Image (cartoon, rainbow, N blue to C red; front, side, top):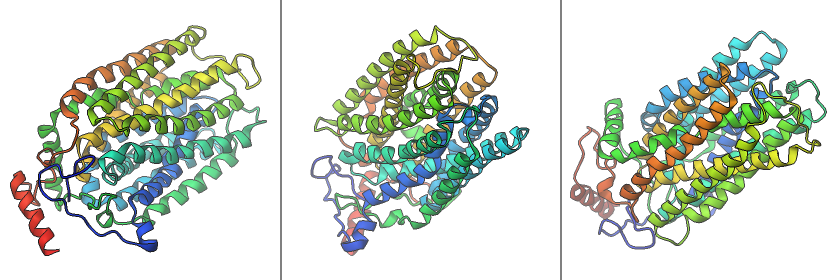
Length: 480
């Protein structure tokens, strides 16, 4: 393992261990960027298509109530499992955890096909949502640990943007399929063929993790191996969970930002897209929403990976998010005051009212990808340890899901649209305000060994001091 300065030299004052890189096809396969691309396609086939279905509003159904209740189940189990998923990932390994996580998406989309065929099978959709929550907690813990551990510190914004672009292609392709198959559909419910196509794609996604490389064999672009903590027992895994909070309490200041990171989907998908547009309009909106996410993640990566110092980049990213929140929500407010639940659901793509509202939806897509990319980048700015990052991503997805479960339930019991809209706006601003002192106090211009508590924890749960770890690294290098 190696703790290197962002630009050059070593952070901890020791000579960094540089490992020889593979060449030829093995060099391409074991390249961390190749693995990130494969990881992106795992999420393309699973969460990306889940997003495509949810982005249609109501899961593509005429009545969004069943979809809302299914999302409550999904995010409730996700919140419960997600908190411990990082420790599960560290015990089982990222590849196995990732594959287990893909299973729920195929079942979830299949439940909507069942609902189309058997209109009274709503309970199955809700049960499938609960199973998906368990699987999603595992998938995102594995995904986050790999995405943040593979790049060097000055590449993290780029790697996150590449992953996010490929992942959101799932939403783009899924929405394009939905748009094509439902362009002349006047029934208000997505056709069976759409769900069948999605089921086939999610089944392919289950196979991709098998083809991915063992993270222990990956060498980063700076010649350092990916940091994999050695925690062979469940006891040390859950001790690591506690130590992460105890030794890095500033993470708690990110929790409000985590809480709101999926909260805004409910208003955007059900209370704006599904409430205002017909099926054709919803399908095109979803396509444009997920397409805009690709540009949003790439755009914010230019700020997060710029030549400025890391602290400056962190504050710049924070400022860009705050500006986007107020642009989108002031704009949306003037639309929200014009309608109440359940909404007209009659705006077609040829309606003159369509243009302004679809551009707002595009801006919401930009904000979403900017928010998620910045959240991951901030976690990556705290640590390079894959074990700690898995735990932090587990916190992120757990708290994110708790917020989503609450607001989907509020939508299911038909809380007024304006109430959900205002709460979304307030929580987004609050999340950034709470994150500001964390950025100021915890984001440094380089990552230090002293901050990597889990790296310094041995197999029995004892935390070694910095000097002991340095000596062990130097001894390992000498015998390599």
